[in-house]
Amino acid sequence: MSKTDWIVVGGGSAGCVVAARLADPNGSRCGNVTILEPPTNAARRVDRERPAKWLNLLGSSEDWKLTTSENPQLANRALRWPRGRGLGGSSRINAMIWFPPTCKDLQMLVNASGGAWNLAELQQDLNDLTELTRPEQPAWQSEASQRFLDAAKQFGAGAAWTYMRLNRSGRRWNPARLFNETQAGGCIEVQRTTVNRLICKGDRIIGVETYDDQGKNEIFANKGVVICAGAIATPAILMRSGIGPRDQLEKAGIEVCLESEQVGQGLQDHLIMPMIFQVRSGRFPPHPSVQDIARWQTMGTGPLASNLAECGGLFMQDSVQIHVTPTHYLSYPKQADQAYMTLGVNATQPQSMGMLQLQSSNPQVPLSIHPHYLQNTNDRDVTITGMRLVRRLVAETDLSRWIVTEALPGNKRKTDQDLGRAISRYSRTLYHPAGTSRFGATNSSVVTPEFRLKGFRQAWVVDGSILPRLPHGNPNATIMLLAFKAANRLRKLFS
Ligand SMILES: Cc1cc2nc3c(=O)[nH]c(=O)nc-3n(C[C@H](O)[C@H](O)[C@H](O)COP(=O)(O)OP(=O)(O)OC[C@H]3O[C@@H](n4cnc5c(N)ncnc54)[C@H](O)[C@@H]3O)c2cc1C
Image (cartoon, rainbow, N blue to C red; front, side, top):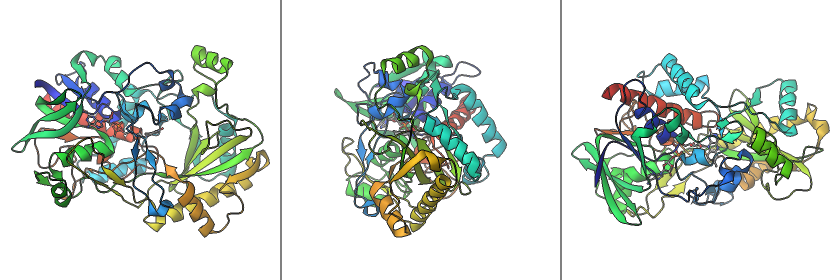
């Protein structure tokens, strides 16, 4: 048994920001912070830093290796759902794109707060956060990205740009680096352990129960517990603590502490449909040459510094995001003798909502994940419209002369029915699960606009699970923004 000022459950994108802010010695520091993050094989691994090699991290010991249930709308496929494990969380294995929330996303958050937040403050928080994370403009770009950006300009609809990245000189930047970059590190302790459940005393959360190879342990917090275990593990921890839908808790033999119907519900994700084109030049190397390695090591540039998803943008009044990779999306990094480019299409505001189901009170038994992709037919319709837009963009610009053929879904698939079938067969997760313990001002919200776990004192939640809706683009920046705001609030409360 041990005691600290603050417990942060999960040292991922949100957890690192929260810990760094709470322990930041500048201004009024809030006290000592203990981050509880499950152990991983922390051996040095160069692929963790090489942007082009992030796919190698999926399925490794740094990935929770989750799998969804079979999706009836996806030809009964079960999808692999990577989630980062180890300090940095999903920022440790992700594609590093820094996609700041759009104005509509910021407004969505303000609306969800029921007037408790205001736009100007949120924008200021985003500016302050960006000064800390310092996303980088990439120094190298593939031929595919250059040609796509030129074509998008020529086409004239929508907005496309080179994505900023959480990199430092062409190397992955992990948000745990904030501990040293903000001098907070001296007051942060990282314990390599896994949280089973929260410990309540009346309506106060006083600590957590953890488990590891040595067995169970309890850790207590003087000031409070901030839960940042991500969109899957946060609702799992809440449910194992007796906070969740009554029927699920009772089925798993867990005593109900607080009935909260929305815990584990409202699951959203972006689903990407890859449109793959064989092109005339610019084959992206599946394995770096000696020169590529030297270029990256000395200057942080060249193809190894590519994050593969180099550019893209929002189209059709922001309802569709297009992602550009200089590869065959479904087979890279297997050797390809031809050059390919993929234009991935996804509906930015999916209407389908899935759910998580607790299987057991045993924390080692994973939740079952039911994303319910495409259950709302609007998501399929928007994706089809996006695919047709891509075909027009290709046909009406200089891309048409560079492209040899559309390999997937292929020109023979013409009707909405054909395209719908291709979406069912080939689309994949874009790795953005969210919304499973939403914050808001309504009765059913799990978390208040002050980030407090409803029904309890001394407990706060902030990570992808609290998003009321997915932002239009890649969500990491938005999640880190929520974490930054939550931590600033706690600093004010406790200074
Ligand atoms: C492969 C991949 C690529 C992606 N690419 C991008 C991208 O380019 N741009 C972008 O914006 N977004 C991207 N995302 C999404 C983005 O990285 C995530 O949405 C974001 O990191 C989620 O942050 P989080 O804090 O909610 O959760 P996480 O960062 O996942 O952190 C949760 C932490 O909690 C820990 N944890 C879990 N269970 C427990 C427990 N029981 N006890 C204690 N700790 C626990 C985990 O190990 C983890 O460290 C990607 C995600 C993946 C997986």
